[in-house]
Image (tube, rainbow, N blue to C red; front, side, top):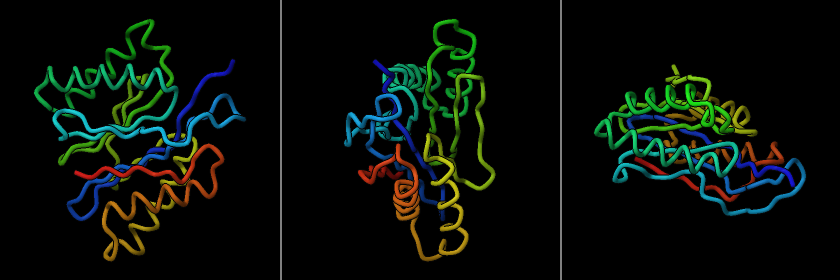
Length: 180
């Protein structure tokens, strides 16, 4: 039996708005779609933080729980909670084997958190992860640059995922968008 994977998360800060989108596909191995309606973007810390995952589903749920505990421990301080999660994730022998990545955001910060210790803030207010992440990232940057004045953060997040789904076989068009 292969591993379950979930893919493609996109997040943007645009014109003072924050939005994160994720597709609904869960794939077993490289060939079987097991679920079309997974929810990979979640609200945490009383709805003030958005978190999205790409990677192994069970690993991502473990990370959501750990990250929410860090948010509680550091009173909603997203950068501090992210750094502490990355440190714990990287230094623990068992956690180090988790196969997932997180994008987290609140009204002030947008960060990528990984198990290799990275906590990265993008220069342009856009992040994307997962198998369709590069497609969504390219689409989002183009939409922001060339239509940004006419589109909301939510519209860019949704359109970027839709474009990625047209290219990436591990991304579907069952798109969830959350806004802050």
